[in-house]
Length: 224
Image (tube, rainbow, N blue to C red; front, side, top):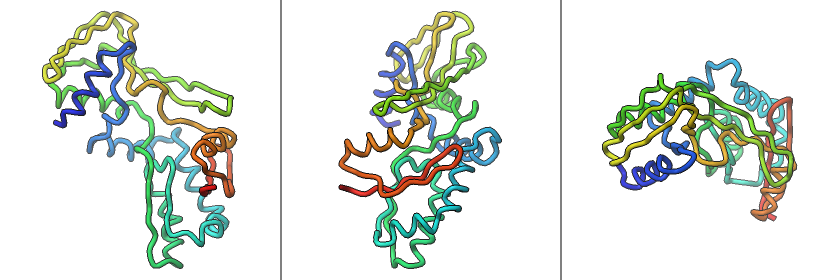
């Protein structure tokens, strides 16, 4: 086990509120559960709307990027949908460099609880999930400088203590205490076009064009 992983886990489990880093759930099993979530959870509709939007406006997007040989995918998630663009670009380009910037996102209970299962398995932990109730909330932000996001946590049903042998750590929870399954600031961030524009401006990037449907947007950007 990488020493840096242990350091990051210790940091989160000693913090107040207590948290486990969001990236820790993405071992082989976690990545598999994320794909299952995208394919099978009927109420996780973002992926389906993303694919539909890209399919509907594919020719327009390709027209915007036809002179480019590098595709940087901000918030790629599961990059299956991006293959639509890559395959189309490869029909006219000898090669295309693809740079995904993200960790996969998605939501279902077993996917998020994989952080606990992995902690128990790899760090000698004995966290009993039945002692907690998993909860989540959408935090809506309307200002240009802050995006909306989702918080996910496990809330203790009663007082409990857990020993994590490989981290040389004892974690205590009182009834109602929260164990967040990500760092501060939430996960699965949701941006308006105005918020995306604000963020890109800070990075000296600009929007070339954008397309939206009921739930998602596709945005093409370039350096100013």
